[in-house]
Length: 251
Image (cartoon, rainbow, N blue to C red; front, side, top):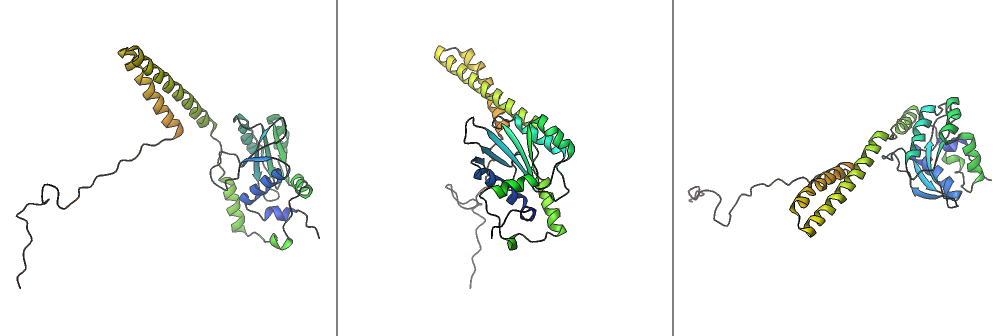
């Protein structure tokens, strides 16, 4: 007996398990995985990153949302995911959910170049794939209210992309690299031409560029180890006055 995919199979999975299932579905369709699902860890707003094997080559960002029936995905989430187009290595954004999308989300998604796949379409794709559905006794596990609240909270903890911060870090990285290279060239030219003024003026861009690179890459200064004074004998003799000798016990 062939077991087909149903909504119960999808809802029985955890949010991370649903992301893995979506990733496996696209792998079954011939796509290459560039980044696996991170399972609740910070992912920069991208659940799965894949790439097509056919020409022209396209990179796709998959957003997998395991929602209960009636909990639709709104237009605010679609606008947030559309911002992933700003990344250099993302050509297409696809949002996959077990539920459905609101009417404003369906209307605005084509304008934002976001592809929507609801629960019904996802089940059709799964049943047409080579991915086997789990046996019925493995997924008919009722979720109590605590588990539902926990899964909903885990979904809400997904990291939103702070685009102004991303742009600032990119600008700092570019300016820092440019200043570091410019200062290095100036130092080498000052040494070669024996021009002390050029050498001295080139030190400042190197320092400023290095500080900007540290800030953009998040490089922290190495903490200094505290030095504790060791008690005991030193090379010059005992560390305490000689008159503080131990008293001898007489028996």
